[in-house]
Length: 261
Length: 136
Image 1 (cartoon, each protein chain N blue to C red):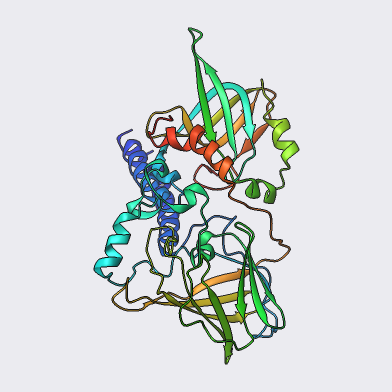
Image 2: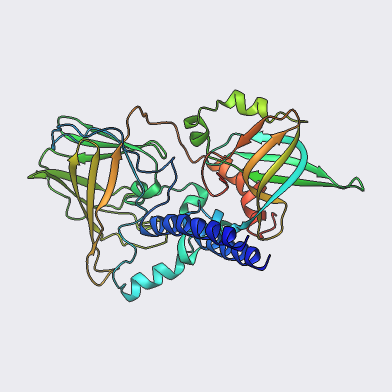
């Protein structure tokens, strides 16, 4: 009997540790969000990014670079409901709790699919979450010198560097968080993304955040992987403020120990 | 028996450590994901709303006291991807239906669970389509 229990325990331990390690690396092993192979790789055009993609990345990497005093102040003011600093949403201030825009790059980290659509003068990213459309200009325009802040960034421009599609974006609204964990950025953030289609089914993205007001050195991401989603479409997936409020009143607030008024 | 208890305890610890890291917005921190509970009641309302669907149901105790329960469920998009239409969901959880709801209860003690599974009186089952409440 004792041996049976130990065999059962060992088997379960291996499975659980395996899944925990996978989660700890990045994202979660959830079929809805997971990295799903869509078939054997076949020859592809590395300059063709079109398709519906999905990945598990939840941030640039596990640890941001050291923050400035200003950055730390913002970080401390952010009360997320994910990760090691998580508090119940009723006690937090995550902008998504009221359906405020996620901003960019957080939209990319939300785990929902997005479609890349190439046109003559733009590459469009069509995100399922909020059905957000991000425009990346490919008409050789310059980045603005003093951009007004916008949720997705004021202007994004892209060009090819070999097989890497390099996107530079400036002019971010600092009310948005970089990720679910409350990592902050300032309006001065310069985001660079390098998209590389490794094979037909795999898109790799490396991000660099240069934001001296918030971080003491550039934040360079891990290699973030997105997989082509076969037989997929972009669904309608809005955060509806009135419905979110109803959810907060009926479920989220009492679950978090907050009595409704 | 002692070995069994150790196994259960260790597994509980592992589950407790594992789930919060993979939770939805606040789900991991709001619910006790180490203990699955079941509650029998009567459906009041199913809300297919964004970004979370919700089930509301009333539970009556032996003395006739009624407690209002709610369950946090999948986003409508996840249900749609899994092949469930709005009409199917509303038919499944029609008001007045007897239902046993399985889930993980809120840490606050409020009558709220993150949904895992429901069994209707006629035997039909509906399971969470992923997320922290998923038990399979």
